[in-house]
Image 1: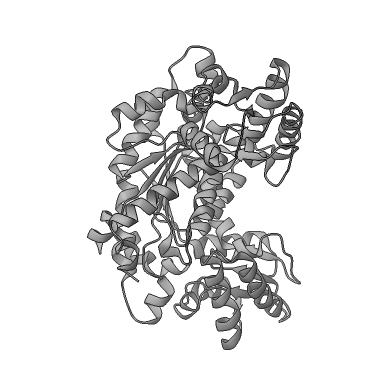
Image 2 (image 1 turned 180 degrees about the horizontal axis):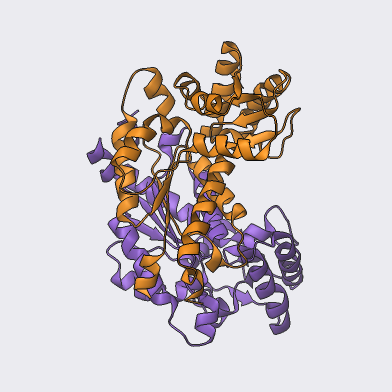
Length: 249
Length: 249
């Protein structure tokens, strides 16, 4: 077997940003996988090392501190046999270009995955409400992709961004889910009222807090869209080696 | 940093048996960790490769097929820097002794973790209802530990074991959570009626299905107890190097 197991294409998850968001992403990969038993699920290696400095704080203060941690995590995943990398942290995508350039395997982009999915899923989207960290907004991680698709990004006002969005994200990271839910719900409701065609949850802590809630506009969850991109990758990989999951029953 | 990040003690999770049980375990590790921000959570490397042959089927048919997969996964985790290994699959503990003998780092035992915790948590436990795979029961993974603690294991009758417990576990593995919940709930209720002092959920799929339910006896979740054992390991590791999580804020 060892040959067969090591020959399996594997998904690498560069996670821990935060740890709960990584678990949420893994759950969404499982949910999105058409499997009827364990052996049909995607093989995954996860690097969840949350000691990496906060991405938002670093970017907003002009620090590159997360970089070495991201690169070290990427190398661990490559050595462990990952054939494609997903990063369930939107803000970490500030470093996506540099990581992708040094990686020996493809590194998926959560913003591209989300914008491609919007294109496919919702007709006539013109305006989306963007819920994300201040760093993700400032670095225009989503803006450029959305603009390319002809979609306008609507953001919370500066004060809501600070007192509802960032405070809510930090509450989730602190394990205060109810508090995070209350704050982020307020931000989502306010955005939904601004004639948007959809809300885009573009920070991986946000869907953890808003799970199960509905708003005046459809909700698009970037974590889920990245998970679906991973499943699509797996299905393509299987198409090239269809016997993989059925060899060792 | 790279030095600091690679010097962190890391938990290795030999998972994917099944993938949902691994996610449930990771969630329980996070919940059990006294953390107020990302950086205070345990660094984890997860090997979730569900193509490993079914442990119950293998054991009951006298096959050693899972062994090579388990050993390969262990080696990946060791190479990735894991300092201790947890296996969120009770039945896989049939191979625990051989894995632990070849491992370069400690491999925790879910049954020992659970039985130690029962000792600490509940006074005067004399009988526990044991919900586990047929292989876990037949191999006496829990019986020996329980007997050492002077606790009697009460099991479902042979027909419930097949039609409720095993069918329920396989439903969870097939993604049919509601079906699994209904079947396993029936098994748990029947056991709770047999004058047990507690129910012990000793298959990692079972707490996934029974989440939020209560029964006529307190529920002890082996997954949760293994998670707490991991947190205790992490706290001991930190005690030896208290600056670890606070160096790189």
